[in-house]
Amino acid sequence: MGGDDTWSSALHRLWQAASRAEEVSALADDVYAPLLATTGVHLVVGTRWEDRQILRYMRALAAGSDSPVITATSRSVPEAAVREPGDEPVVTRIPVAALDDAGWPEAELLRRTPGATFVVCTFRLDHRGWASLGVGVDASADVAAVEGRLAQAVDVIVACHTGILQRGREARRGADDALLAEASLQMDSSLDVEETLRRVARIAVPAVAEGALVHLLRSEGPEFVAATHVSVQQRRALEEIGRENPWLAALLARRGEDEDTVFLSGPELDGSPFADTAEATDATDATDASDASDASDASDASDASHGDGDGARPGAAGGDRHSTVISVSTLRARGRVVGSITFVYQRPEARLPSSAFLRSLATRAALSIDNALLYELRRHAVLSLQEHLLPSQLPVTDQWDLSASYEVGDPMLDVGGDFYDAVTRPDGSIALLIGDVCGRGAEAAALTGLARHTLRTLLEQGTDPGTALSRLNRALRQERASRFLTAVVTTLAPRADGTALLTTCSAGHPSPLVLRSDGTVSEVLTGGLLLGVLDDVSYESHEELIGPDDTVVLFTDGLTESREAGGAFFESILPVRLAALRGFDAAHIAESLTQQAKAYRASGQDDIALLVARWTGVPPGADLLPHPLQLVRTAR
Image 1 (cartoon, one colour):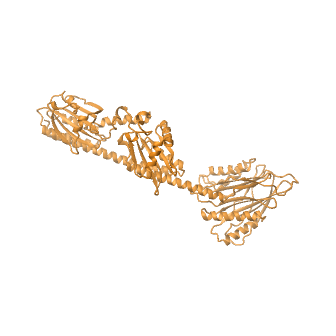
Image 2 (cartoon, one colour):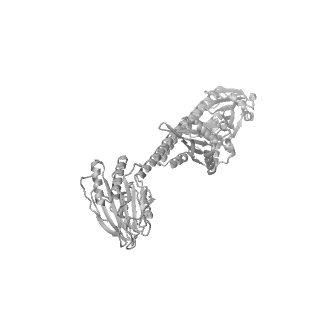
Image 3 (cartoon, helix red, strand yellow):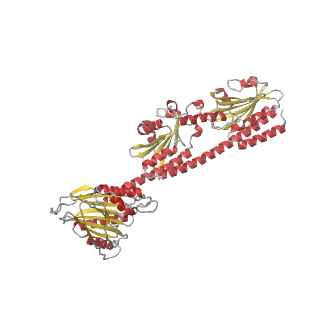
């Protein structure tokens, strides 16, 4: 037989190749050629088996031949089940004449070459299957030496296969960790419930599964909220299943608070919309390409001398569809169940995610969803409270066009301190007030309510603006308020000549603007000390006339301090933007300025409040007694 030194050199090269191999198939030439060079060996043949009796691959190389005979298949050979080894490799000598074709697919090839004995080593590569590597020898062979060489070659194959699987697991763990990190970033970047749920579904497809459905847990049961699939057609089908299918609804209801991820396949899907999905639906091009690649990889891997154990499930080779598998994971956050995520798989078993990975993904998704839900609840609560701090209606007559706008700017959604109001006075004038309490939160909200209602009451009684602000300042000092506030009060009194007297008093608040009917914009010059800082403060008033179609605009600093990326404030362009709104009604002006400031700012998140009054004018000599009032809802 071939010299021991020659075999030792070949074995050394084989180990070196194994240490570098990314696929076990790379070892084929280094295994087959040295064995075939052994004295008395006429044929080397290897097989790869799955599920005890499914022949996935056979490769044979005969003496004198330059190319191997390769057979890729998915043939069931029930009689071969008895050949399955245990945990340790088993070497067997069998006369070729004694081989039964029913259990030995190698027999036909062995009979074509000289030799009377088949020396074969069977061994396990992984939990899903086993393999064999054998040689056909004649009487000139040292069978004991051949057995030793087979055992040594198998040791290298198993070690190489184990290393590749280990590196694959490490790579998958790295990919899983990267996916989980990216999933957390994506899901945490939005506090909108619907957007978060859509991201949960999108992140997992196609990296984790071919399809995904997300349900929220409501008091009346699971509520479908999002679905996605690599195929647009199947995505629509999944959406319908998520909304209306009783089988899935019952499954999710049964799951309840079970924290374990459950996988369902085969008979477990009977009666479900996922039963026989693989055969009943058209796969997408992406899935077809993946299946073809998997089948090719499985065929290459099924050689006994280079099987990698990652072949497709039975029936997947040759372009067949993979059997459908679904998994259901409970979404639990902060001790309560918020919903569930269902994944739909149409891929080989080896590419299914682990339960541990799905639990980790579900935990991250649950926290993101719960944060979004809590944010939404808080948002509704804050907006509701904010509404109660603002007037629900503004008074109007045929002389005044009044409107307001309020935009919450803080992403944390604490209650803001901006407020406004408009009240009618005994002399037929209208008083406009707007203010801003320093800070946010419950304390600011309490002070906001106190300030607005105090000013409203005083102004309704006919108190002049300066006195009203002084009395509010005194009330704040008596209450030992820990926060200061700014405010401006303007009264608009009609005159017989069709103009109106504008009387304005400010306590440290941005000055109102007046948009004249000719398009010019002027600032009402007024000033005064902040409210709640010093005792016994008096406030001076400024008077000027406005004509028909002139518009008075009161606002908080959230409007003027909206800042663009370059650092400029909206205040610098406010007069120009306001002038461009000449001729529009109060509602349009209020809403337009608010939206323009929002679009302008790259930074600055303060609330924006505007109160706009357009004087429509009265004809000379008209009755200036108070007009009958109507109430209209204000924009909030």
